[in-house]
Amino acid sequence: MITKQQLIDSMLWEIRIIKHLATKIPPGGMRYRPSPEQRDMLELMRYLTACAIVPGVQAVSESWDHAEEYYKKADEVTQQTFERAMTSQGQQLTDLVDGISSHDFAHKTAYMPWGTPVPLGQALMDMCVKTLVAYRMQFFLYIKAAGRKDIGPAQCWVGVDPQPRPAQEAAE
Image (cartoon, rainbow, N blue to C red; front, side):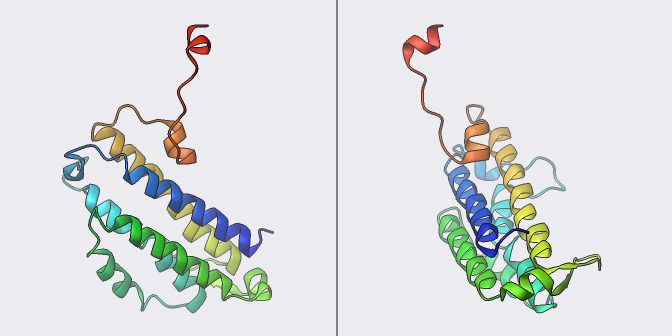
C-alpha cells in the first residue's frame, strides 16, 4: 500500500510539472482551443487549479457541497496567478492527506463518483493523482498544438528543460 507521504509527493510532483509547463505557453497561446466544444487554454488552466482538491475533499467528506466554491475561485485565475493557484492546491492537498489518520487512509471506505466503494487511499490516488496526470498531459498537448513544437518528454514527464548535448556527442 502506498503511504500518505508517497501520495502527497506524487501529487506535488504533478503540480510541479504543470507549473513548469505553464512557462512554455507560446505568445498568443492563451487563445488556443482545439475545437469549439473544448476548453480554451485559460479554461483548462483554471480547471487544473481545482481538479484534484475537489474530488479529494469529496473522498474525505463524502459530499460535493464544496465543489462550487472551489470552481468559483478557479474562475478567477489568470495566467499571472496560475502558479500561485497551483501551489495553493498542492498545499490544500497536503493538508487534506496529512489530516487523515493512517488507519482511515487504509481502511475507511470512500466512494468513487460513480458509486464504487474503495479504501480512502485508493480513492485519493484514483481521483486526485490520476486527474492531475490526465490533465497535465492534456495541458502539454494544448501547449504543443498552440505552437511550442520544441517541447517534448522532458518537459511533460519530468518538468525540466533538456540539457543540450555536448557538441562531440551530438556529432557521433
